[in-house]
Each structure stands twice: as C-alpha cells, then as structure tokens.
Image 1: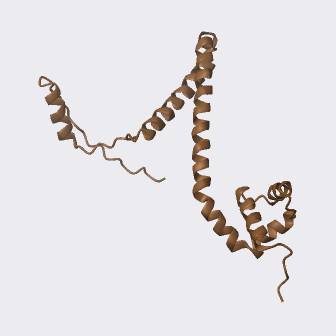
Image 2 (image 1 turned 120 degrees about the vertical axis):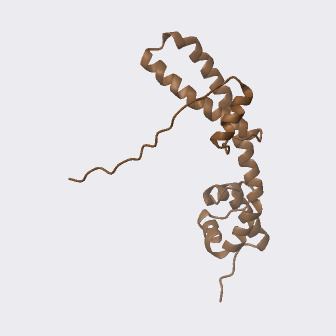
Image 3 (image 1 turned 180 degrees about the vertical axis):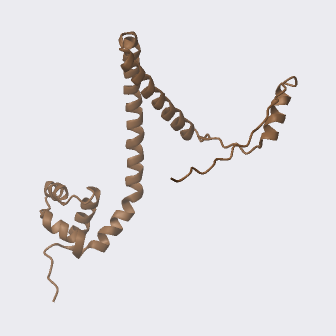
Length: 171
C-alpha cells in the first residue's frame, strides 16, 4: 500500500512550481515556501522532483521554458548594453594613455582591439539581419569582365604555371 502524503495536492503543486521557478534548487525552494508558511524539507522536495512527482515536475519545467528563455534573452541584452558601456569607457581611458604604452604592450593592445572590432562588427551585422560572410560564386572570367567594365583601359596579362608537387623520396 502506497504511503499517504501529509501534504494535500494543492500544496504539492505549489511546491513543485516554486521548485521549478528556482531551477530545481530544493534548499532555496524550501526556504521560500517556509516564508509563505508552508514547511517542506529540501529532501522531500528533492524526492518529489526526482521520484514521487518527477513527471509532473518535468511538465511544469517544460511549461516554464518559454518564460525562462525570455528572461535569459532579456538578461543577455542587458549585459550586452552594460558590457558595451564598460568597453566604451575602457577604450576612452586606453586612448588617453595610448602614447605612454610600451611598444610590446601597444602591439598586444592593437591585436586585441582588432579582434574585438571584428567580433563587434560581426554581431552588429547579425543583429541587423545583414550577412556576416560573403561567398563569391563567380569564376575568374566573370571577375575579369567586371574589372574591365570598371576600367576599360585595364589590361591584365599574365602566365600561369602549373606546379605539381612531387613526392619526396623515401630513404
């Protein structure tokens, strides 16, 4: 005969929702429930989540997924704005001290700034729905024709030499 729960179905349901709202953290859920006057131990909540009410808990999590995703997007966008502000301030400070940087540190800084500029450009294009890469599908004849249309007096003469690699001698 199954054990009789001392908690009514509504209490269990509420507790599972609080548990899901706290990403399954049974200690935090227990503390929050206690603040509302419902005392359920964290080990009981863990058992409900993993065993007794696992299917219902998973359903609650699935139902909450769109909300969690929306919250994650909001948080990410807020962080992007904050990091952008910090990056701008750091760039302004760096610009003021640029002349005082030792050559090695200056080279390192320029390299890191170039990478950051590339990432920021790529993400700005992506957020605007613009392409972040361009793939050329024209052959050399089409490219030469386009160049000559741009500059009719352009003459390109060249000779191509096929260099076939040879296998190194084993010895």
